[in-house]
Image (tube, rainbow, N blue to C red):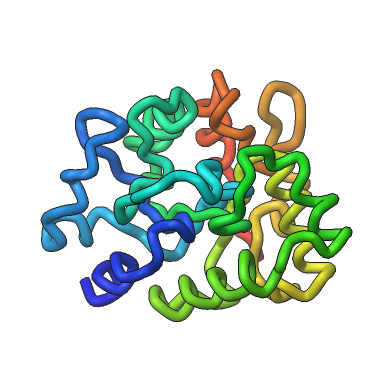
Length: 209
């Protein structure tokens, strides 16, 4: 409960949310009763997107609204894919936080060129989330989409994310097949028409020894 309350205090524009939804994707009332919401959550798994898609011009943004947009077909696909699976209730966030772009494909180049302040838009938010929820190196981060995976590796190379941080594609790269290919990461939910099956393949991964 204390950690759930701490997550409420995180800057909503940093992207923090949880993989639980009400009757509709945009219904945030599920977060209002802390005593009811907290037992549904798990902090040992973090599902992470590339960037806060509404960027710097979104205006007022409510706590946990990220991944819960009323008009986002991608968020609805994510809700349908995760509800009823072991990933339901996972912490949700973005790698790049409160940065004014909707286009994740540009982020790598901007990081390399020094146009994106890594300390402000990555490191500070990553640290704040870990401290608020008591996350650490053993917390399993699962990047959603190939672009997020590439950004993760780039940020590890730049020292923005600890190399020792546990990450899905670093442990399970030779795992079971999905549609004939080894599962390295989840397909991005905005286009993942088969994400439910991809989640199933993820959950079927053998334990790491």
